[in-house]
View 1 (cartoon, rainbow, N blue to C red):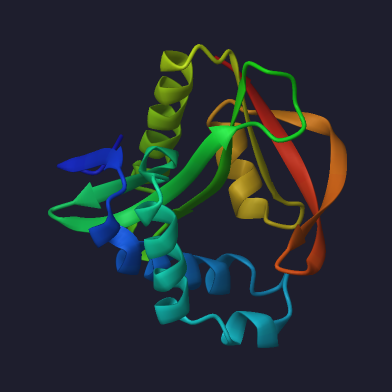
View 2: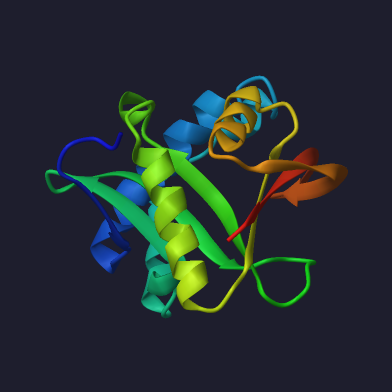
Length: 171
């Protein structure tokens, strides 16, 4: 069930600061045991907000979804064509929900909206990759009926190589 009154929509420039705060908070929480502490400590919401403003300012709005409750952005996802897969596949590159809004259907609503957007573009498969050690995310994707891929790979996250696992959905 989704939180009452929540809407999922394309991001706008005015959402940059809220997305950045969610990004920093979520990374510090979810990756505390998976990434170097000094890296997480130096994440700066103002710097992230500037990055998001640039991204959203150059037409990336259709690639970013936000969840909004009572005028407040409480989650977001970045979506697009799947990396390294055949045409016809979409990917959720990033999905984060503010800590206080987890377990209220926000993440699932964002995923379903992403899948709807993929279907509207004629895509038939969706993927998401997450850090191998992120057991909360892995459990969430399984609860969303994602099929764990047999492959594991290393992904560079701002210069840090980390093991990731993937999930697949047939749309």
